[in-house]
Image: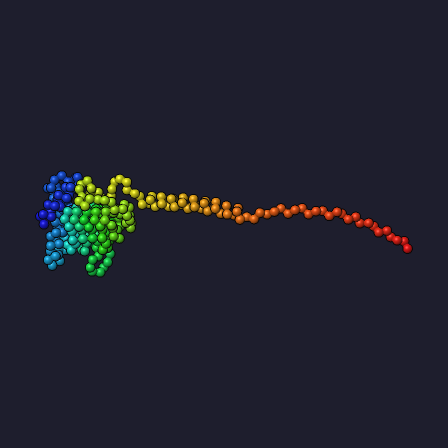
Length: 255
């Protein structure tokens, strides 16, 4: 437990420039306090003392504002920054070196027993207010944007945002070992992040331009075809005038 605590404090110093010393982190970071209470409650839960585990979890929630069910599985180096309002459900699994910001919910969508909460693999970053719901898998080094609602699995190294969450950045080549340089606060890069709405509008504009060009081509082909198939109409020749027949009055024959 003390080894985990030392590692957790070192992770905070690495990822938060506001942290000044180990003593500062130990005394004033609610994420560290919540993890201490979680590990005590988790030990009680795993050894059959369920009521004691829930009580310890409740005390930790009261003191830190972070609710972690003692049945959840949390790895080493998990950084809960600010932390107020974070909720981690009973069957949730959080891998090593995961970062969670305030207001994050790892919730379940089923009332049945068994696995009903998400699994976050190593290196995942979840922005403030994001909700990850159901027994889904969030791949290694994935990034969840703030206030996103994730209800489908997230590929490794991908960035998702929105309600429901959609991939806005395909998986990039990210080193397996993160450093402070690779860390992305709140799960969102600050440069060249594509806007999914603008990207959709650009795609529609390109499609409309392509359709317009095709329509013009078809109209030109149709006009040429009609011109080639149009029969030549000959002008009728003028009819020859018949010479006028002079009517001669018959002389009446006197009888």
